[in-house]
Length: 262
Image 1 (tube, rainbow, N blue to C red):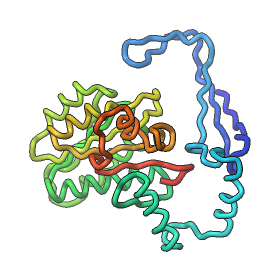
Image 2: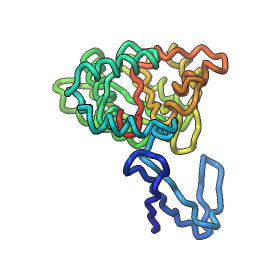
Image 3: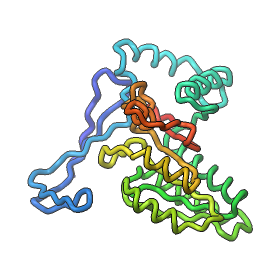
Image 4: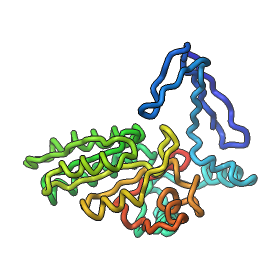
């Protein structure tokens, strides 16, 4: 197995791309349901932690970023004035009433699922989390962790159940929603831009189902934030640009990540 560490030009200190080969050997590999691809050569999978390539957006952005990292106490809770202004600016930009920073996008998902599960258990006694089959590992792990925590929160008989629906398949999601007990609080978790295959969720259809089944919607916008939509706000803005009525207020919690921070 080949693993390479490639420096990223003009990026922040230490940024790199990790490239790993995927052995093919002429085998058939099933992709996206019925599609089957014969891999003749070894494809290379590339990844980087430099989300959104923030330092590369403007030619002179690296120097002030380095100054901020060296001179300002950015640890959460260490500079309340700076933190409150930054969270307020982010909330305004996205059209929300509040924003919370975490140390990573993964941590943001853990907190989001835990909060939804805890609230659902207190108000409904039962929580069901449905997530897209192609969802990022952080969503899947956070949903499972929320179920484990829910199992230890006292006398909630229903607990937290975790299930998945077929990728972007609204018929299957409708089927799964129809099977959920009416007393349960259901949370549907999706990505704004799926890193697994680059697809976009059908937000207008999801909102139609939300209106009928009254579930909570959690969106991980780590890969769509600042990458599409006329203002870089992700999938909801993308669909609004196409003329659909997709207000971000329909989302209970939206998480994202910027160069490692959630």
